[in-house]
Image (cartoon, rainbow, N blue to C red; front, side):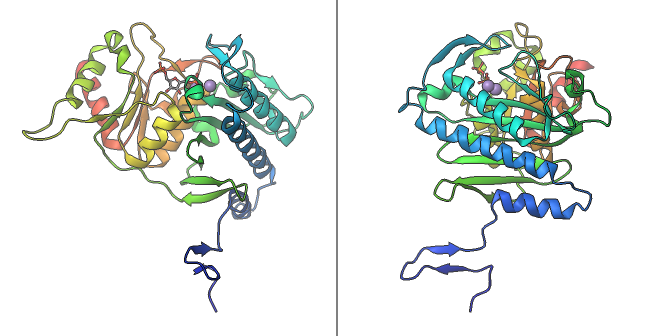
Length: 351
Ligand code: AHG
Ligand code: MN
Ligand code: MN
């Protein structure tokens, strides 16, 4: 007899079969039972999120086959051209959040104004999302993903955009997916571990494959669009220059890796270590990436995996309060020691 935890060889096969899989659904149920006060609302919201991720992953896979490549002919709130899949991803996300019945207000990169679900006046959550991050990479089949942050509404909240103009430290959960060779989901709850799930398409389930992710303390990989370096401030230029000089005789400089989809650059950085940056610069003094649905959720994941995330003023990213729902920020995030190098160089300039 074998115990439940064992992997066994299949009948006649040599592949080890794990019969004790932790699916996202099971994981969420088990988390809920740990919190005696839980009502199940958060779990239901996560089930709807899960469905949105699966649907978006499905349409991305089929994009070239069913004429979903290319532009939709419109622009979003921050002036970016929308791809057809940006529009579809956004519609899928809105529909999933509405049907969960647990979301009062939703901010999406693709919507100028927050969407308030008046049909659910007692719903207690607010969600911010980038339905498809990295959409300029879509038509080349390069990985893209979805970023999300979840806030619990304060008692008596009216369901207005002010309910989301809060620091990332107020989030109850955050994470992102990456639709790559397989769909990956990285998720963390406030003050909890970071867990990574991999979509098993045959089962149609996200499986816990990377429990309690901890990122390396350092790694000589940097990820930044150096094409903007002409506009960078001096500390950023100095930081990047130091990475390209070997620290000692015969040593190696850092490796450059830049995919141009934050989710994919972030996922690699979480697993391998290193640093991802999109600094504010002289041309874009507020940076490019959006606080609510790009910077803050990533900051929560990186900090809880043992790394750091700061803005271009070297303030802790997760403590920044956005001035508007699409407010932007510079960001440096990654291995603890790699971000510390950036902070140390900036401090030198402050003196
Ligand atoms: P989005 O596709 O949601 O607009 O986000 C794109 C973002 C992010 O994914 C990436 O890190 C960055 O923009 C790339 O910008 P550049 O092309 O300027 O390097
Ligand atoms: Mn994005
Ligand atoms: Mn996007």
